[in-house]
Length: 380
Image 1 (cartoon, one colour):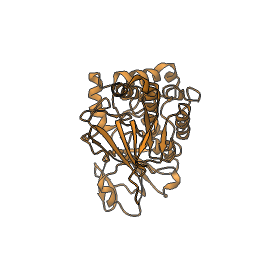
Image 2 (tube, one colour; image 1 turned 135 degrees about the horizontal axis):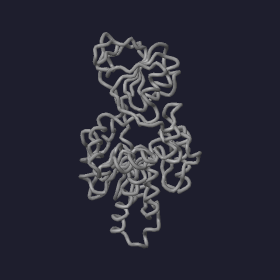
Image 3 (cartoon, rainbow, N blue to C red; image 1 turned 45 degrees about the vertical axis):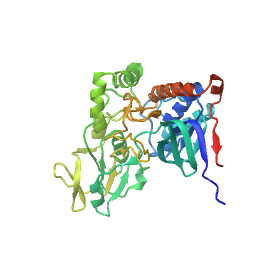
């Protein structure tokens, strides 16, 4: 006799166990809201571990800690991606956050005033849901990529790990944001490199320099990115419309760094001619490798609810506009330019947790708010 599918009930379900999801969990726990975090990868921090080998964070360690736990490194060092991954794992352990790893959400819908979440490990039922994932879920590359000659090695930045993956000869990097610029520098001593794409601008100072330590990093990350450039200010709203299309400024790499090692800045890549990439200015490049640093799609098509917009989910500082009790945390420029950065995600997480806690208080007596992660399983 077949057993009915299991349904796990919890007040609040957090989808995503990276810095956004763990930060939400921390704030929910402080407010006594029962919750569960689902993480699709096998281990907390794997989203960082799976990035390219030489990646270091773009901000100093003093700005890389989540609420309640500073990053354990000298303040002006720049942690590696593996150090960040290990920090997230320790953060979850320190605050005993209830995380289930290896559980990928396949569908989110709503029925009779509650959310229904489907996974391969069973169904979940929740009053409130936080989608705590960045909008960098699905690698994006242009349709014409398929027309490149089969001999050209193609990789997206999501799949790039080290120069050993490339074959001899010139490299075209499509996309001149932070990832493209950093990878270009890494490859420049082994390959001729073209860097193609719009100029996204750069910080007007060296983030690793003395001026940064004297206060410019704080003014930029905590002041400009966190407070000035937000949806609450006219300049923030204007920049947000522009930056959603073009990407953010270079943080560690500067145009002069690229020029100094012989990287050639070229026009945008517009298509393919006889199997080779062709630029907007008509120039055909004899590349043997093409690295697509062209960003990501949001990858939220598993959300079967009216939240989808042209470039991002429909939300106001993370609160879904048309679905009650649904929140997003970790989106690019969600509330401010700092929203997708480690030092900025805590404010958005706290805002979502406060609203969720208000709803929880209306549905239960004060005496029942002492349990953090109680889960009821029915149909087991």
